[in-house]
Length: 289
Image (cartoon, rainbow, N blue to C red):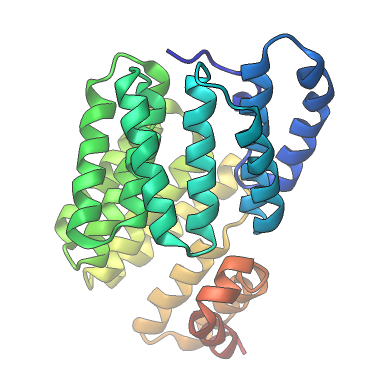
């Protein structure tokens, strides 16, 4: 079973550039140290910070270096390498290559009893595959996370409830999606994890709007807005977008404008949305004017 590496605790997926800086500070001593597996694993995570910043060439260059350092006895570093190479391919839309690596990572992690990494690989298969295939992987990952004795591996449940819920949502099966979104709320409430709980609450509100329960959705998003303000959480652009959409459907277009404007100001700066959701951003801009 892989040990908890100190760099795992430094991850902030919302700030890959900041995380990159922290990892680079660890590199010199890690490279000189006796624990070569630690050094290799750290490099794989450094590559992930590049991928999340959409610096795919830089990510692959780091992973090329990792590949040269790997030896047959490096079980966990090899699995981490396959996961991060796969994630880099997936983010750059090379889905076939990504899938092969995620499958290989899953088989290796399962073989050596690395539950946390096995669930990570299966959850990535659920992302790269679509529809029924995605559901199959996500449901397997949930089963694995619920049954494992590894507490770190159990931590995947929140993300898995989220991913599986969205798969059902995208298939139009909103009732099934709602069950999982509510489980996600319960999971993060128990963890007292406020930022992720905010996301979970947002998912419930979004699903309510998809179910044509607009007034309930509006109430849920307004309650979320007030809760975030009370808890000192940063104002959320996705929450603003949903409030705007609810008000728009309810015929309150003038009231919706400042929410759409706020959402556009923040979301238009998101690189992924700019590349993949141009129509959505244009809609926000027009409705906020």
